[in-house]
Image (cartoon, rainbow, N blue to C red; front, side):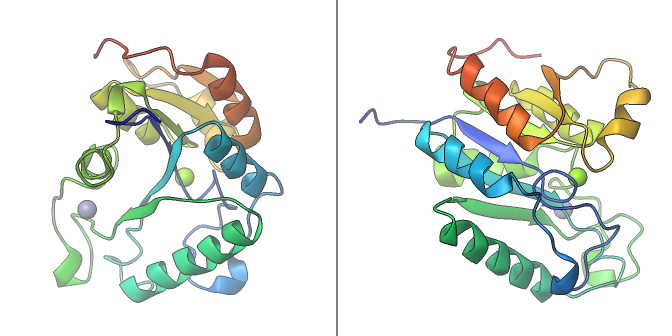
Length: 199
Ligand SMILES: [Mg+2]
Ligand SMILES: [Zn+2]
C-alpha cells in the first residue's frame, strides 16, 4: 500500500446522494437515489476516500437542530454500511450569514463555495485535494472544487438540470453527468491522473 495523501471523492448530499427535498428536517423524508449505495461502494473499491460535504443552513435558519444533521448522517451511514459502502467522514456547515439562530449566524469558512470543508478533510484525513473530485448538483460545489484544484462534476439530479441552464462566468465543470452513478463511471475512467495544475 502506498502511504501519504490519498485522493478523495467529495459528495454533496442533498440532490446528489439523496433526493433534494428542500430542507430535510425529518428522517421519513430522507431517500437515497437507487444507485447511491452502489456508487459509493464502487469508489471504495477503486481506492478513493469518500467524504460527504453539505451546507446545512437549515440549522442557522432554525428549521431543525444541529443534532438532527448528525442523526440523518448516522441513518445514512447505517444504510450505506448495510450495502457494503463506506463514507469516511461527513462534514457539514450549519452556518448562514443571515441565520435567525444567533449561535450559527456568521460568515464562515465552511459554507460552500468556500473550501473550508475540503481543507478540513485535507488536514484530518490526509486527502490529496489536487487529485480529488467533487460531485454536486450546484455550481457552488464546482466553485469549491475549482478553488482547491480538484475536478468538479455537475450531476443533473436535484437542482443540477436547472443549474446547467444557468452557467456562471468562470465556473466550469470537468464533466456533467446524468446522476451520481454516471459521475462515478466518469471518475473511474479518468482515474488518478496525478496532480492537476491549480486555478
Ligand atoms: Mg446539493
Ligand atoms: Zn460554516
